[in-house]
Image 1 (cartoon, rainbow, N blue to C red):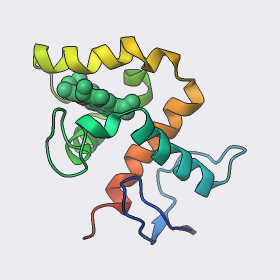
Image 2: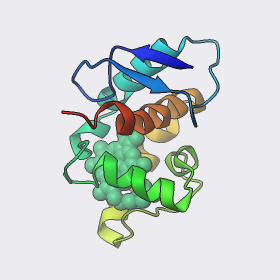
Image 3: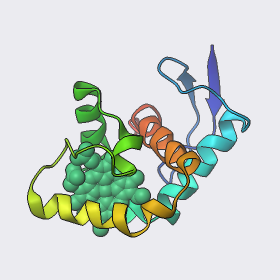
Length: 131
Ligand code: HEC
């Protein structure tokens, strides 16, 4: 079964069938609302200033993060909660930049919101890769 989604987590609005493989369970929010909120959080919480989809900006690209998380079976929510060590870029100065976010504002974000962000980041791979 697939969902038709009309917005990606990046800024372009795209429609594409999303297969439900590896997708998190749907909670009370509809799937569309989850993507929409995750997308909004990703820009509202300024992730987007340091993370581009395809290119390295200040932080690694979403693509790079995803491929490492897939390969190493990483837990992004745990990382964003400060419970898991970084696995993508372990250069001390880079880690410090991201840790500042975790200690600064991510600790004020609810688990629900962190999950939405992580879900959204994972979807970028499926929605944002076709130009
Ligand atoms: C000030 C710039 C900056 C902002 C803002 C920022 N990041 Fe990062 N991020 C980085 C840098 C630099 C790294 C590389 C260091 C690392 O891998 O921990 C990184 C790494 C990551 C990683 C990979 C962690 C790992 O396992 O190595 C994830 C996931 C991530 N960021 C998600 C986010 C999310 C979600 C937000 C918004 C809530 C965000 N980032 C905001 C700079 C930033």
